[in-house]
Image (cartoon, rainbow over all chains, first blue to last red; front, side):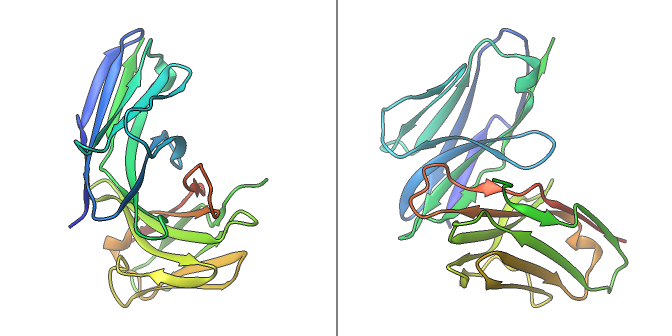
Length: 112
Length: 114
């Protein structure tokens, strides 16, 4: 069965710390890996990764994919309280690449 | 762009009642997805449509659940009869052909069945 596993389940850090979130996957027809941030409402898109070894950056967030080892990491540097959220990893699979399978998420709490 | 629009935002209903959730995808998006989110099971794909045609409904929990997409701008998810274990947040999402931004989610419908 296809699966996406995220770790840690949750973590608490202080403002200014760096956090690293992990996502490993096993899917039969991988197309891409996506990261989302979910605060109180709907998940919002962060990154889409399709190629190994190419880092994507957006401000203090960055992510990289390793298709050989089947995992991705999401880094947040100089964390702020506004980074507190659940971070979701999802894998797109299948011929059409439409179907997303989500991991269980990592809950991040950034304390002042 | 108004984004993906879901209604209602909240629904509280009694066990056994019919519940209908509605979704308007982003104009021009050709794929629509219904997800359910609970603390225990996270985000689960229920069903998705490409060009208004249901492609994969393997996530629909049982016959009490049904989904339709009569046209490109509207979809419904119906639960009949509803049960307390159906209580969850139901998200609709849409995506376009070749979109580099994954899905766009609606704000969700929080369903409580008492």
